[in-house]
Length: 499
Figure 1 (cartoon, rainbow, N blue to C red):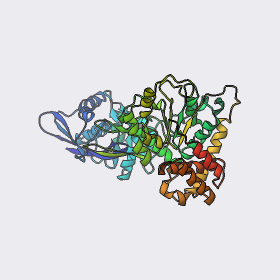
Figure 2 (figure 1 turned 180 degrees about the vertical axis):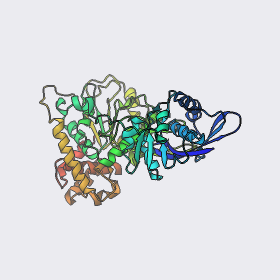
Figure 3 (figure 1 turned 135 degrees about the horizontal axis):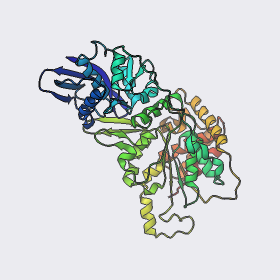
Figure 4 (figure 1 turned 90 degrees about the horizontal axis):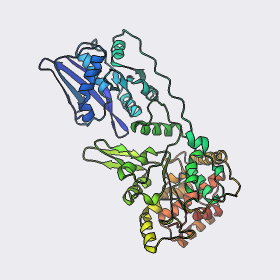
């Protein structure tokens, strides 16, 4: 007998529909899986067998062949096991004919027959819906995420025995569990506030501009100057996620296995990898299935690189192209993938190995030169905002709280949204240099001043465009329609030669 049912597997952060075909025939008992499964897929035999027997169901002592179609696409993970078990029951006449028509199943099986959650449910269900699937059966923990896909009826299966009984009409489908409570800002939002930072007026302005316009920011200063303290508070002033952005963030986090049991993401991601991270960890990759790296996990949010100069130069230079193109292109022998990478890069570092270059440096000229060579000029040029940070003044009065700055950022983002409504961009930092003069032109006197400043500082075309964008963001923060000469001067001052 032959039975087939739909399922799906992950390719990067996208779903690939898979048709699971099971054939049961006479012959020596055996179980084989074809269709380019990975190691987890090949090991599914023992899990499926134990799950069926633990659930009181029979295991056919015949020749069992499982085909995962299309056969030319590599299948990864154990999320096809529930579909294999259901198709096996159908092929062995333990389910009525036609029971599996129009269904799709996702889930990993435990040895006791229970169904475990899978990563990437949103992308998998989205791919199934695009293929015309009307009903998807998922583990209970994945129900809230699967329900985000419109037009698909979601049912849950807690174990294989319950699945068979519900498919035969002998039991009612269980209700999906309620999603976990909505995300909170956790410790970052609950305990951090910009009012904790005293002094550092220019750095606070740069942080607000970075949050509002999506500009990359580099803070350089001695230990204890407040760089990290200030940088981590950017989470308290970021604008809220739009619905489309929230779906993108949810899709990526789900594919990385970070959202089990939760529904739609509500907070912008904040990723802070350790400085020992490899190129693959930052950009993405790995074997056998390339996975999104930190730069993709920070999509629509912040990638914070503390102690920037301690990262491997090869890893930092690998960020240059994704930062410019806002995408990561991974090409491997078996597959080519594209991951999104539209983020705000926030970095901190010391000015020299000892960190006291601005105070009482103990480094030799050779040590300083070697340290500064770890950060290439093309990488530094990607930062819209570069600022030298002095020591905080403990006696200075507290600045505006995060709530006040967050409202200022929200208004600036609203201005950008209206201005860029008919363009493919959403924030000032996304506008390419070729479109600046048409999308957000400068008044004639201000444009002349901007050109003079760029000539005086011998800026590259990329650097000149970044000053233009930051000046526009500074005007947006003040809720002004026109960029002034003061905005251009301030934008230029926020782009120092820090190293």
